[in-house]
Image 1 (cartoon, rainbow, N blue to C red):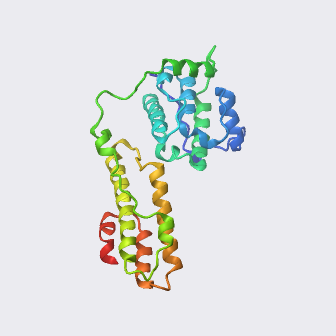
Image 2: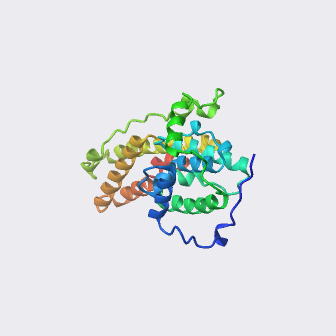
Image 3: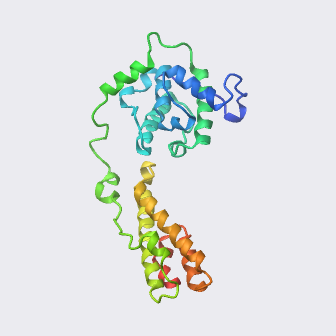
Amino acid sequence: MTTAVNPPPTNLIKPNTTLTGRSEYISWVNDSLKMNLNKIDELCSGAAYCQFIHVLFPDSISLKLVRWNANSEHQYIENFKILQKAFKDLQVTKTVPVEKLVKGHFMENFEFIQWFKVFYDANFTEWPAGYNPKEMREKAIIARPSSTTPSRTPDILSTARLTPTKVPLPYSPSAIATLNPSDSSLREKLNDALSSIGQLKIDNVRLVKENDGLKTSLQLSERDVERVEYLLSAVKQFCTLNMDKAPEQLSSILAISSQPPEQGQLQNHDKTL
């Protein structure tokens, strides 16, 4: 296997005089690979990097394993794992910040493409004869196996362990907004709502910890997260608007709803109240 040229550390690299802004980097990617990316954030899928490595070192990556139409963090991570394996085989010393890149934030992806351009220039000799990047991707999609998941699936991926407990939310935000602070059942109703939120948070933390070995952040579905955040917002708004009517109780509820998901605190929130 060929060994790649490792560029110097970022702080020793001279400013790139040919590419200075985000639009120029996007143009370089699109022109080189015949892609249609609109912004730096879209590099978070990892697919473009895989093809650039294939251009430089054709034997280091199998394009048919790349997810060209990836649309989720899980699929992005699969692509970056392919890139990481190629880096390892090529003895590239750069650490790929996968967990940050797959979030799709501009700064992390812009910093990585800046480093990658320097790496690419250090290893580029000439464009492979007859290499049409768009046609190569199309052929790879057709040749892609129906499943690239190993036959021996780790226990950490079992559906039973990774399915969060479905906890019904007993009160909607609109219902919370109409609660009367002087109602004797106020504490019980809000406690029920906070218990549901707490259980969902605990489930989320548990799943992330269980999957730590695979370096993958598994979270509740976007719909559940949206419901939890919406309900939390309603609880906080209710407490703030009615603080003068029951300051001691509502202050405690507001503090609990703002706490990070620490299991002990969530389980004992009723005692605090």
